[in-house]
Length: 432
Ligand code: SF4
Image (cartoon, rainbow, N blue to C red; front, side, top):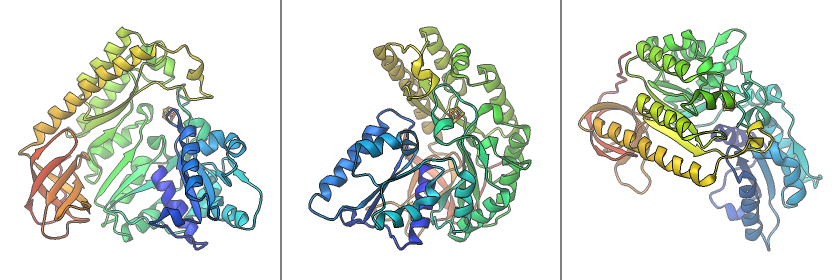
């Protein structure tokens, strides 16, 4: 979502004649878009501002703007502690970017906008064309979260759940289509909670799938309890909806899920997985895991490993629990750091084995790839992804950017696969 936000901030900045530079040492303005999900996020901001200060020690000071969730959560402290920062904009206030810059240009005092003005934000953004010109583009459809998982800062930094209107989203999807996007990833902290006057995520997917230039649709991130039957059905009826679902589970222990306030059990989760596989047997899953959550015993951790092996997630994103200030879990008694670290190593070893086994199973098989770009510094090599988002590289004499091709995978490792084109015609094949 930060990538989407950064693009939209740039769309705004162009209106007041600010342009991106390849040489940051000559910049008049720095915008640091921040994420607060991991520890040390605030320290990273101080570190980045320190580097800017060094570059401009003997030059005119650039305007320094901090946006995003660290700005939201720590804005006041940042302004107090680091005088070099001029503007703080929370994630729901960045539509005030231009006004802030113009005021700072006129030597206004420091600015701190961190109200939750999500309606005004999107009203402003809707007036400006989304200029993202990537083959695979993002589209934020929903923001915020009402779930209040006890470890998570999102409800405090992005605010409560808000869904944009279907008509404005369709217009923005058309912008992306006309800018050569072939794939759209619909974004939201709780994307499947999308609901605008009764229009759900499945309705939006069906509407966007009618745009002929858009060949692939994805969405992230989903909460298991918001997976409604209409969305499950869309996975069997909409051939443009890709069969990889990112479905965070966080733990395989019901005791820990309850303590996290996840609102679902392991059984609910597995039942959902079965329903989705019934709707489309090709579907595969990726997930997020928190290892070493307060109260996690060896037994709870073993249950998480059991779930990992049972579902065989093709991608597992795992982190040791890190307390976010202001969240209820920050007050819980932590488990020993060495134990949590050891469990993480164990988890990641098994997750990597599963991933490697999966990738090896793809060798000598055919797949369909949407090519996103030519590899930098690599002559005749193109980068793309298959339906399951597996990164794939092929060699080709002609430009493959934006093209969908059937390829045969010939080699690979757990990260990247290498293939050769077996069909020149544009295809989009995967069966529901
Ligand atoms: S559902 Fe996701 S975004 Fe919402 S509080 Fe839980 S982890 Fe955070």
